[in-house]
Image 1 (cartoon, rainbow, N blue to C red):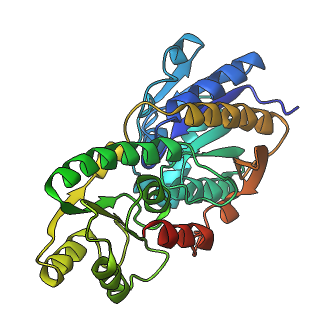
Image 2: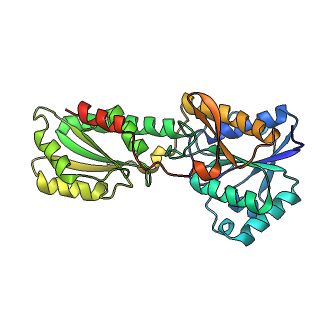
Length: 324
């Protein structure tokens, strides 16, 4: 095993339910192996400004069920510069940190990859993002909680939609990825799902609405925020084309990031946190730890951040079949 004495852990980018469970697993695994742990507040920004706190078993007590991140998170423009990364490295040396565990998504791993190349510090990443848009893991930390939050919200919307015979356009998060929209849309029985990975065929959507059952008292269309038309414009187009429908738009927004993590996210975060520390102790660096077919896998950062360009055609087929 490598002679690592202190591991730094931080969360970066958008927060995701399960990040605290991951922090807990990393801290306790490191302590199990007699390695010190330092928490870095506010991601790369805190690394540059020297916001470091020692962490103990007690530091992570009673956090596995909490959403958000106790280490806070922030975007860092300074870390995008070589000068900023050099300052971050100097802070790590000053605090005797030998290796890092980064919990985040694409931007986090892009920065970590540069950091390794420039300063050769070992970094292992955990996929902490609700979008599930990283290669090298079946699910990212926070995704399961986010889609269940969407389902819970849309189920409530469906209740009022049925009471008033309304058509609801529900916009969900997913600037570059439609995976939240796709899975939650199937889960709520949506009439249509619009995602960035496939061009929206507005004529096909109109035809589906024209041919939909007249006895159906409510209709739900799920739209990812990254769809090229978008929730607001789709709503206006449907209102103009189908004035008979009582059409409403609901944008779920940041409630999808919050809330207690699901059991799946807690277990996933715990497994990946343990694997991350053990990877560092075994000399691995520059990789994201993920779960594929229920087995731990390591994917180089430069591969993990490549976007999925296509949605699962089987899921899209299911949408068309079940929306009759």
